[in-house]
Image 1: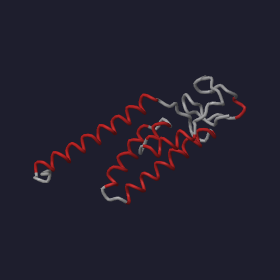
Image 2: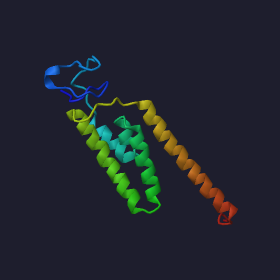
Image 3: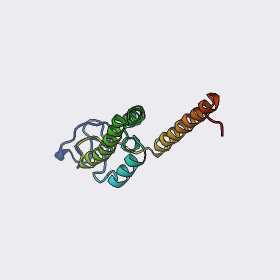
Image 4: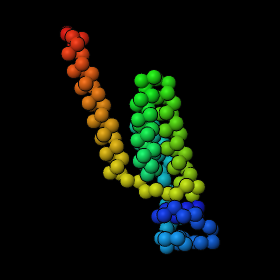
Length: 139
């Protein structure tokens, strides 16, 4: 039985059953996050584990923290590893009912990865352009 209403986040007591006393939403206590998917998402793309868990803002922060921290190497790695841990652990907590369950929005996940790929493409394009402008691209 979840400890929070998946619709409004109101704390639910065991005796309240499968109906939220605040918003009246009916919910199934069997709704679960797939821990393997949460882990694969978190490993494959910084912040994607958080987006899978419905925490878009946190996912963007993990992605930006990893990108900015990569300039200094170690901080980027630390943020990336934290993102993996947090994506998995948050999915566990949602399954246990310790935090409110949030639906996965696959479209937002695809958009998140698409924006990451676009950003990497622009970064590579800028690097190649700078190499040619400053004469480092001569073959």
